[in-house]
Amino acid sequence: MSQLFDIGMVGLGVMGRNLLLNLADHGFRVIGLDTDPAKVEALKKEGNRASVDATTDAQAFLAAQRLPRAVILLVPAGKAVDAVIDELAPRLQPGDLLIDAGNSQFKDTDRRHRELAGKQLNFFGIGVSGGESGARHGPSMMPGGPKAAYDRVRPMLEAIAAKVNGEPCVAYVGSGSSGHYVKMVHNGIEYGIMQLLAEIYDLLRRGAGLTNPELAEVFERWNQGELNSFLIEITAKVFRKLDPKTGKHLVDVILDVARQKGTGKWTSQEAMDLQVPLLTIDAAVAMRDMSAYDAERVRANQRFGVSVMPLDGDRARFLEQARNALSCATLLTYAQGFAMLRKASTTYDFGLDLASVAAIWRGGCIIRAAVLEKFRAAFTAQPDLPNLLLDEAVAKTVLGCEGDLRVVVKSAIDFGIPVAGLMNALAYFDAYRTARLPTNLTQAQRDFFGAHTFERIDEAGKFHANWEGPD
Ligand code: 6PG
Image (tube, rainbow, N blue to C red; front, side):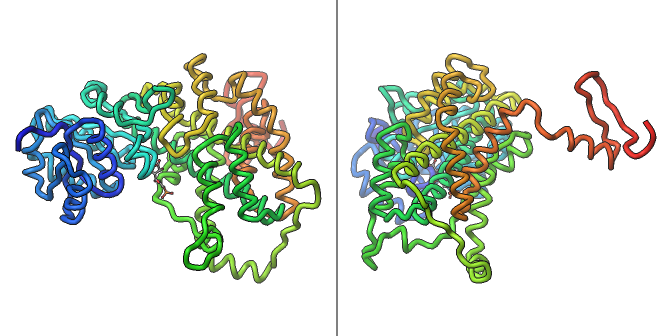
């Protein structure tokens, strides 16, 4: 071996292989490790240069790297990460650095950090978004953990990250497991927006009768304006794609059961623990679950029939309303995600800089969108802003589209089309701007049946009423 490698990559699946090649393209010498000889051979063939190598032998992999080592793990979240750490840790030297770049549960990241710190090994978690093409040509990356450890690999990560106006879509997000936490919330937002897109698709197709080519045109047009984003762009492309097998539009032959790896569910579960309202994302997770009951849905369809009442009005006007409704609900979904990050930052002492999170989500990741520039500006102007809805410019945008969100939700009710995401986005907005919610009644009931006490609007303290007896 003439020269030692700058960095190692464990896991040569789709993400690992592409990230490794991306590093090599930027002048870094990278060695890969995988238990599958076919993956090792495939990488050697594809890499085909002196700065790229791969092996199935952990010892040889470690011996080929310069010290202190930096090793990225890109293996499936869960047990596989622990298995790799268990194999490598005893062979590493104090000061070596392990970077978990998978979609790990943030609590696992905390545990691994504690365990490895005991062995004088550095460890941090990094959220990586952008799928296969992002990994190869520029992902968005969310590193969190010990800052000094991040600084060691910072030049490499900045080199391979997506760029927006020359700025790399990677920045240190905070301490502890914050990198994986931020990525989890990214995925929660991803679930929310994808659900909103599915509902708009349903409204335009079953409600307004648009064909696939018409849907493609609409989404292409929307992508030119305020809604400009990766998810809108790929949605337009989906509607154009034909199935080579049947010649039909591919989207029409895809089974309607949505699978999930779990990061959206984790976001909702974690939000409940943190006591943060996350209405749109909760609805998105629930609708993926609903989609899995396909056999029962067919039976229920036979029992209740189809009750869709198509649009009876101006189609062009409805399309405009649908676009505004989608913009509004999307913005409200981001607002929920950022509010969750705000709460998490205090609860876990992450020290998150939300302006920087908004900045690194502008490019490379699945939820990249033009609107993130507005969010970055909001958090830059007010770093402690608790909720994007309290920012003047964001509020103005919401006020400009919430009327159409209301109209579209009402139309969906008339059509008989389920829009749990849109409805919950609207409910979030309506609840958040309600100075006095009806939860005074909840408190009265809790005190009535359980003597749980209540607080009063005119006097401090806890009170209990004798609800059925004399005053
Ligand atoms: C990304 C994606 C990526 C992955 C999701 C899919 O940011 O690049 O979020 O992480 O595609 O985990 O998640 P589901 O399988 O749960 O839909």
